Length: 123
Image 1 (cartoon, rainbow, N blue to C red):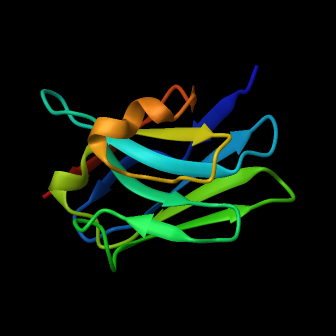
Image 2 (tube, rainbow, N blue to C red):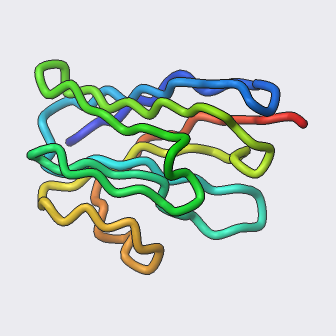
Image 3 (cartoon, rainbow, N blue to C red):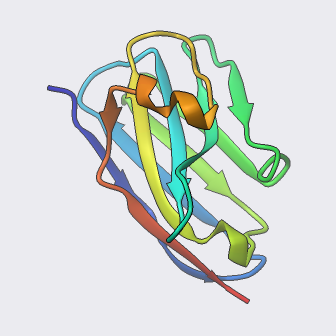
């Protein structure tokens, strides 16, 4: 059974930064970050595939950076210039295929999920 454990969430003022981490119990081909705010659907934020190919939601391009340390099976999300609309529960997700889509309708393709870490950005 794959385990994903997130950390690094918290409260920050607009314009601030946070770094999320996700430790996986084994190597996975595709890993990503999703978020869900109250009353909204879960949305893809960023993903990274085996050879480092990254994808970002338009809303976070230029502000967030996803990276992975394969030796440590650890995924990161550096979030800069945070906005109140970035407030949400952030989830680490992974799967064993290399198709790292962020399309909301294909969220089900991610087999493994963490418990989530809350990010709150105040104005």
